[in-house]
Image (cartoon, rainbow, N blue to C red; front, side):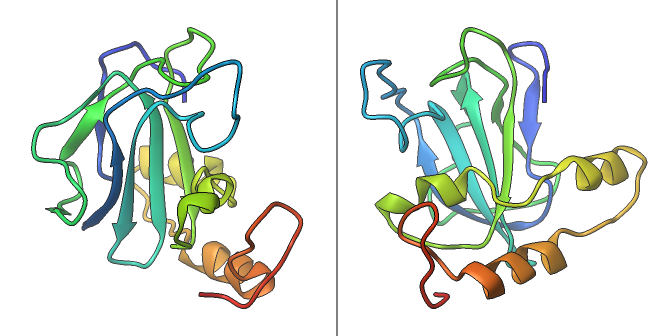
Length: 152
């Protein structure tokens, strides 16, 4: 989502912070993958969906792994860290809660978020739960793109 640098990024639902990256470790020389997002926050919603936001310029104080947050609470600010190519925007990902250092490509999103974002902008309540659950049922928590394993 394109936005001006410094615009607030808020929790889209109540949940628990899973992961926070406060240091931009992206290096164009590699390795590509886990550090592409720069500063980022991952939230496990009470609905079971992982919501991920990256390329942030700052993470809000008190936003740490294990902390409970409420919908609308500021998590950080829009930025251009990681592989954002110097363009201010928020990478917003929807995925199941697969875990582990090698799940970066799932964390960045496996369900296209546009229809949910559009609904929320119109004060709708369209939920990504069914789509994320369906994706996980079909793919499990693969260790690498193009592979499948049992969920979980």
